[in-house]
Amino acid sequence: METGTYISLAAYFVLMLAIGLYAWRKSTSDSEGYLLGGRNLHPAVAALSAGASDMSGWLLLGLPGALYAAGLVEAWIGIGLFIGAWINWIVVAPRLRKQTEDLGNALTIPQFLANRFPDKAVALRVTAAIIIVAFFAVYTAAGLVGGGKLFETSFAGLFGGLGLSDYMIGIWITAGVVLAYTMVGGFLAVSLTDFVQGCIMVVALVLMPVVILMGGTDLNAAARAAEAAGNANYLSLFGGLTLVGFLSTVAWGLGYFGQPHIIVRFMAVRSVEAVTTARRIGMSWMGLALIGAVGVAIAGRAFAEQNGIVVEDPETIFIILAGTLFHPLITGFLLAALLAAIMSTISSQLLVASSSLTEDFYRLFLRKDASERETVNVGRFCVLLVALLAIAIARDPDAQVLGLVSNAWAGFGAAFGPLIILSLTWDKMTGAGAVAGLVTGAAVVAGWIALGWNAEFMGGAGLYEIIPGFVAAWIAIWVVSGVTGKTVASA
Image (cartoon, rainbow, N blue to C red; front, top):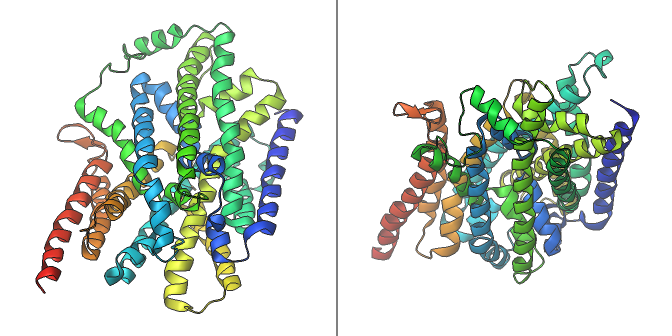
């Protein structure tokens, strides 16, 4: 790799660390500043922060890889996500912004649930925090796998003298930079870096397919190669699509309502009125990013086929194209975009997991009278703790980014999705119903994965685990709330 690429990447790392230092000076003196940026995010920052923390490495690795291998039918994942995100901004965002502040100025999702259902406060905070930390360890690991693959593909042999594989070096460098600005600058650092990273990501995703097509690449080359490999419907949205396959892809949109690292942005917008502006900005960004990801995959396969490029791992197509098509300085920028996608999500997840450990364990059970400075420092330590756990999970270089993300996405979506929606919109919901929904959603997802039904179901293709988990959690909340509500009323 050439000097220009290293210069671009170094500039990106310096910028992220500088933002962390700025945020440290601005708003880390108390818990509300460290965990929510003082509830004063500009709509544009909140919008792109929510989008960038959502669209992790899977947007530049996992989704293009799936589209590269299977064809346009995988675009239904993006369509489902777009619809789910739009509904999330409409239904959840304004209500969560208002209610979290009205109900005891809650700083975390578990805290909000505890304030909403005080009779089950401890059970909800502990159960929610356990689920958040467990699934975020896996989710963060997915991001680190992306960082490892980037360094393994782009910097092969560069770090050979350190006694570690290029893959593990990539994981440690990615984690190290994220830890530096997250531990120092807290939520504001994460949100501001997300904003910058979101801008970089969307420019890269739009730029790459445009350059490929302007170079005269014939998209039909991708279709011909796929047909030769047995897939005659490569450029069809509906070719070979089954009902189960359609439901499993579109159902990704259900996950939005329960992603703590996304919906926490709603809590930090400067006002309820600003949510509308943030929604418009965020959905415009997301539409461009998803179209760009589809373009990278389809145009990338056509380019690879026409130029005899062997792509052993479809999830690395973005990295291969970045190194093949562009000047080293631009290559560095594009690789920085991939790191941006990875790091924006990791930092958000680490901070949310840390906030749960700090507010819902440390302050709840160990030090109820902890000072603000002590709480912030404990939060920084918890960021490091969760990161180390994620690094341990990500050690397998054969792990698939999209697979890890899909499992964690389903776990959060099923456990928290129905719970968040109903707690904000249904006044007859009870604390017992909330606990039942939380536990049922997480348990059904874990059981579905353990039984392998997400890979093969009733003799056919697997059914995505978020569907049974989401439905089961919704029913559990409705039934248990009905029973316990009547019991309270009769008493």
